[in-house]
Length: 86
Image 1: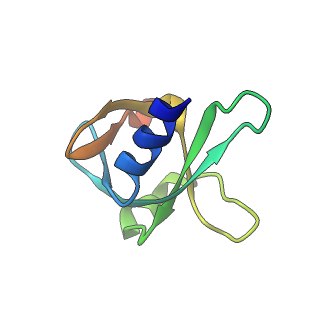
Image 2: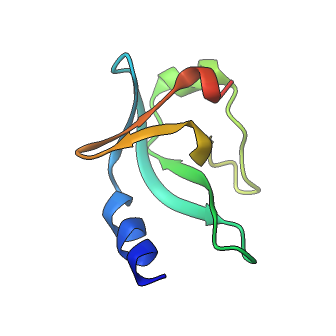
């Protein structure tokens, strides 16, 4: 479980981009399944105008959400597959 906490800290504030390099914004928060601890969504902060076209799911506060299942790579950036979001 400790490994997961470190991973969570590691991806906070990283820039989220598509495979084609389109910038979505930054990771502002994470949404977990309480029971299993499974990561469900990345909450975007500073979303770009590009995300407006995508009609992303939103949380109660109106923050845009990226399904964690769409994440295909993490490193200097969080790379997501747009096909898996829409």
